[in-house]
Each structure stands twice: as C-alpha cells, then as structure tokens.
Image (cartoon, rainbow, N blue to C red; front, side, top):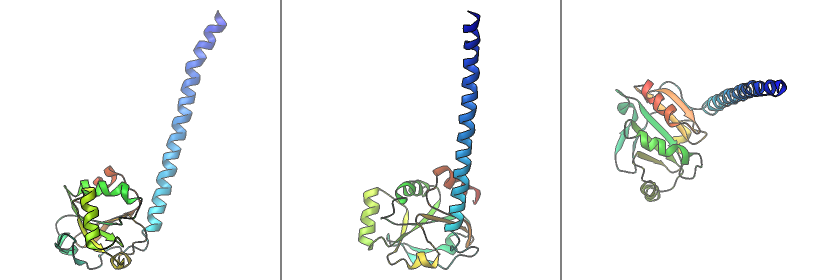
Length: 180
C-alpha cells in the first residue's frame, strides 16, 4: 500500500516536469520563429527606400487622384503592395481591407492586369480600399518591392515602417496606431 502511494505522488511531479519541458520548447520555437521572421523581413526590405518616399501622384482604379506626400501630412498612410495572383496576399488583404475603415490605406496592385479585371476582383472579394494599378510593375520597382505582400507606412512624406510577407492583424494595427 505504501508503494502505491509513493507512485501516486510521483505522477503529478512527472506531469509538472513534462509540462515545463513542453512550455520551454514552445517558447524556443516562438523565439526562433520571431528571429527568423525578423531576419527575412530585414533582408527582403533592404531594397525599399528609407527616409523620404519616391514621389507618387497617381489615379486609382476607382478614379480618385492620389498624392501620397500630401495625404501623409497629418496622419499615417499605409501603402499596400500586393497582387491578385499572390498566394500570401490572400491572408493579408482581408486585414488591409478591415484596416481601411479606420486608417488611410492606398494599395498598389502589381502586375495584376487591366483596370476592368482588377475592379472585378475587388468587387468579387468585396474589398473597398483604394487601388492604384501598377500593371507593368514600374511603381513596384521604383519602391524596391521584391516580394508581395509588402506594407509601407508613411507619415509626413517619410517612411516610418516597412514589412514584407504575412503579417498579423494586431501587428499591423499596432504599427498604424504607434505612428498616428
């Protein structure tokens, strides 16, 4: 009977050790993921301009004239470089659309076809953010965009944040909030 009692007392201690082990392993995986993601983000955004933005005065597919420097004078503006054919953009674009109701969002659709096709895509997906059609990729090259999706936040005509790849809604929202 005494032997059974000692075994019963060891079971909770073993479960606690196992839980601590898996917790430590989980934290390490998260740290490795964050470090790897940050390094990839840095590497992919090296060609992007820093400081003052390249001039961009354009017309959206919705027919609105946009001047990014003027638009960013008093509030941050999110510039979202994406493509209709981009698999990762399928995860980020809904977040960008959601954010466009609270923040100024201008998107640049890179090599995504003619305006009619782009408007049909936007309507089909029920997206409402403003889109500049970069049908031949010229704007993307001027901005040093090497991967889609890429998100640049500007304020007062200067780049304050840039990221590439998949980003989380809270992370994107916090970037816009901190730069407000």
